[in-house]
Length: 152
Length: 152
DNA sequence: ATGCATGCAAAGACTTTGCAAATTC
DNA sequence: GAATTTGCAAAGTCTTTGCATGCAT
Image 1 (cartoon, protein in one colour):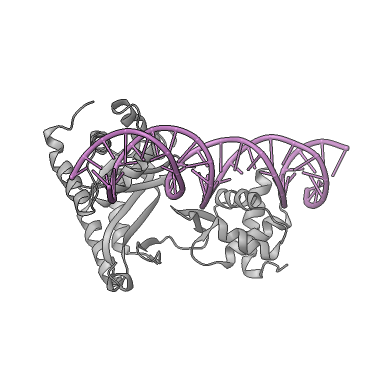
Image 2 (image 1 turned 180 degrees about the vertical axis):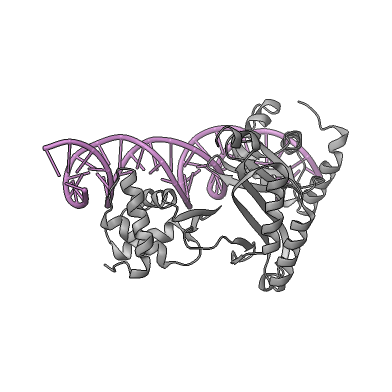
């Protein structure tokens, strides 16, 4: 199996800390799933994570992947990105600047972006209503240039 | 069964036009599902729609509700709102000003708002990437003044 | 007559759960 | 050694599909 690189050691430490705090254990399987997750940029479905993880840990089961994803979310390393018809997909949540999504309804392409003026406007909304901010999701849907050209 | 009110006649006409265009037919069942959908403010899950529709058309089947929702979406009357663990929920898409949501994670309160500067910024994002806009979802999460005071 | 619509039940896709064996601390 | 983790398979959700019957045109 491939080992986690040094660049992943911080995430590994976070997961270990989270597990210890919960009285849970670090295992090779969990390390492998974390490694796969960190090696994939962008969004991963549980299915994709399972396929990749199986290359490193051939005997791994789907259930373990699902269980481990929940741990990663709990540890603040992963975040639910969106639920489509391929199931829920996840994205990096640590050392990964917050961004929003522009999704093509034609081909499924996802573009990540961050817009300061949107962020500022959101802060204003929170202030106006006296809310303490905790997080947000913005998803813009439409058709990309390619799909528009093809007639949706 | 309850009949559609005059205020719903515009939506009814839209659905009829859409169906005719597709070579499909308007039926009492479809009218009932539309009526139920229009009578529910906010978000509806397919399950809730089924339960309500069954009160008006006792023999209606789940499959018909699912099939009809897709027609409503196709006709531009409904829109997918979000997919959670209760399944996908839908909201009104016609004559229903677009709005975004500010959600309190403490008490579940939902405040609807609309912010012109956010809308403008979103249009700019679409233009910048050459996308043809189709819709968006913005959900701001946090804690409302009351919950903050109570210590989350 | 032709073909769409419906309800039922079966199938499908995605996720969770139960359990005995293996592994970790 | 005690308790957690794992893989497998079964069960659970939510949604879609197949099909015979019923209706509309």
